[in-house]
Length: 402
Image (cartoon, rainbow, N blue to C red; front, side, top):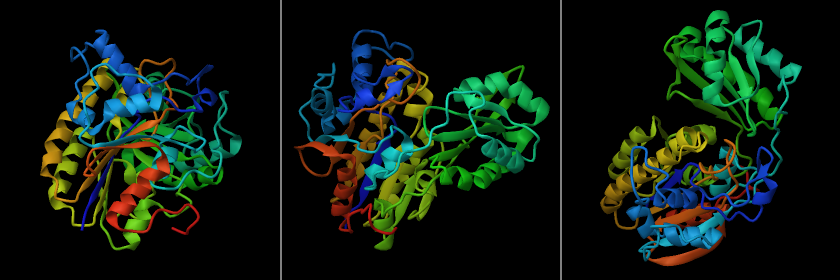
């Protein structure tokens, strides 16, 4: 019995989305965005020299077909990424009307989002009175801070001191369908923050807001505030039978690595492993040895997106890609006969692009375990179908009950 390792490099898009002109960063359409392709160009031009140097070095991913996938998706011949593939490669196009984490992951797992997400307006206050009251009640405070669109790192610097003085949670949103709540992990309390998010999530989910996210931080006004790894996403449940549901129903082990458990509301998950990306890579390495035959290992490496994409840090994103590539190269030779590794992404976040938001892009589909061949252009849902077929379980079904 074979195993599947589905690895999501969060935000590592490859351009070419046919509907990119309908998605925006500020007033600029996402047309022309290409996360990995533009990073490769910046590296080749010497514009990504902080903590690394020279052309983008991704020998493992390129051998799986990354360069070919970029060219297929967008027509770009990315500098340094042109190896003859030894893996199966393609590029996937999303149909869900969102360039966000739940939309991308659900659709990769076989269930496109059937509704339009609710987004909060770029006004102050951003939240309706009903939501503000619910936040105050859940926090046990007589007010909240923020109540606007904001960058997560900037808002804790701007509001952190007032939060420490008043004890009010910092509540903010973005262009995604999300409500984020930041609070000091020690002064406000981590469990209190998680309980607050859990309490308000049903109201937000009824509004079709995709996620309520706990954003704990530490520090003080003198030394500055820093977010901790203890982020927690309270996501609306997927509306159909996902890849995880299918595997679980067939009695298979489903290992969620990173924020996968949160994204799928823990439905179908039998084992959860969390931490920063470096720790997640250790978990993945352990699972190569530990996961039973027939298991699904579904992992998300979020720091591409949170640490480098949103911050438009080209050098940092390049460093993280090169780190991931080296670590993946250590894992592939240790796989069992019949194992399948699929490396993909959930959306783009081009660090060379204007703004700070996700970018609408196609994503790579790079497979180790299927031989060397072109998979061509496909849909996100084809990724979940491919994984299910390899595991010998029923395909995901957006119309079926979970």
